[in-house]
Length: 456
Ligand code: NCD
Ligand code: ZN
Ligand code: ZN
Image 1 (cartoon, helix red, strand yellow):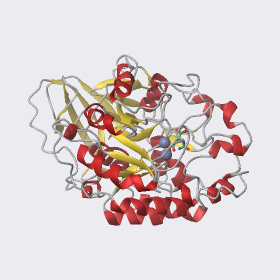
Image 2 (tube, rainbow, N blue to C red):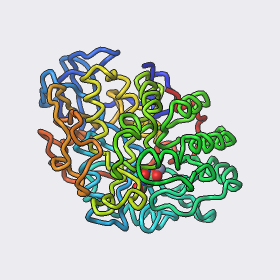
Image 3 (cartoon, rainbow, N blue to C red):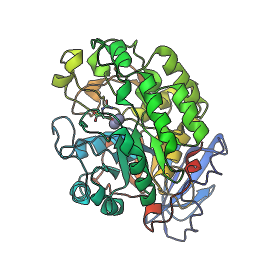
């Protein structure tokens, strides 16, 4: 994958002169090939040098295990504030991220109360120090026009819901959307859109299982919503959340718009049973849609992988299908599921790293997601022989279930955040050193980049 010529991110990092704190020795993919590599990490947790026979600090040799940049998951719901706290908290959600190899999460604003002004962002940000296991970017909901300018100085991104979904009842009328997007384009932050057009929902149809859910919120509603985004100003840093079909993926790719696909839409379909545990928005699609999305992901045509980690309690999911909430947990299992697909030779490692780490990090203006001098030493150590089968009781989601029970997975053995070990032997050992981050390009409010920055 030729990602090095992508103009969308913080490149041209300065030469590092800092003191080398330690050196990680193992194998890594360099120029498309797995080979022995040494990574020198400085006192600030930044990659100071990459090469062979490096000197200057103690060495940690992981043998033939593979070193990867940690993932950035642009789409999680940590449910804080408002809870319910037995389902998820900032602490429990970010520990799952750490164990799943995710070093930065984008936390969605559909909490109780929703994040609609800078007080809301600051209230969330205050919870992070000492409690977050990994870094957090905070999205805000642009519902109050007068709050937008200050929000753009405190939030890490905006989330626009074009249709109701869990925790979101009010959405802008379709006539208001172009004006909203034009205003957001001026503010420069990345904007993630939940793209379903509710006027295409078929609420008259039955609601008893996954195929019904797919018929009620059809792919046509997603396509119509994406088509309506075609009028957005080209300077808007537009990203479409949880894309489910090849048709929508092709359209966004042709327009140079960033988007993400989730493991559940890539691996599961409406045929995976009628359990409300797999009820999600947008719905799981037909097996043909799933296969088409997966084919594009394998070809490197899906810019970003994101979990849409959206836990709900066993109690609420156990309700009859029509009464159960939509959403499933996934931040702990996203990368491990895909690493198992790499091991099974169904996916190339470089394609996965580009979608899970490099592009999402660039998208939110973070110097991480690649093994490169000047990038943060947010690193994973993966032993591809260490295959396991997912079991909810051995995962760390307080909600206590996974839609991927029994699926093959490979968990990172070690995870480093800014050069500091937070996972050892697959166990979380961190000190909750996660921080709130914002896009580096937002600091000085330069004009937004063109959308093609997202191009694979
Ligand atoms: C999400 C949730 O539960 O917060 N649910 C879902 O089905 N994906 C909201 C969302 O992302 O639409
Ligand atoms: Zn959504
Ligand atoms: Zn979501």
